[in-house]
Length: 145
Image (tube, rainbow, N blue to C red; front, side, top):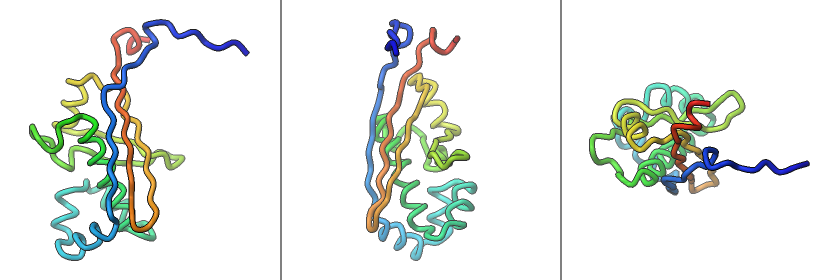
C-alpha cells in the first residue's frame, strides 16, 4: 500500500481546541432548582426532547453542556459577542457519533473564522462528563472540490 502524498491544497489548519469537564451532579442540582427555565436557556428544544428520552437525562444534559463549553473555549470567545447557549446544538448521527449544528451568532462565528469542521468527542463516567472539540479551518481550494 502506497501512502498518499498530501499536496499543500490538502492541508488543513487547526484553528482551535477546547476541552471541558462537568460534574453531572451540578447539572442535576441546576435541573432540580431551575427546571425548564435552566433547560430552555441552555439547550435547544431538540436537545431537551432527546435527553429527556434517555435513561439518565442528567448525564445527557451534562455532556451537552460540556460540549458547548468546549466549543466556546475552542473559538476563544466564551459567551461574548452575542453567542447564546442555544446557538450551539449537539446531535448524534445515525451511528451515535456526536456532531454540532450551529445557529444565529455561532453560525456567523464559524463562517467568520472559516471553520470547515468541528470535531467533537464526548465521554462520561460518574460523576463527570467530558467533551473535547477540535476546529479545522477550510481553504478555498479544498472547499471547491
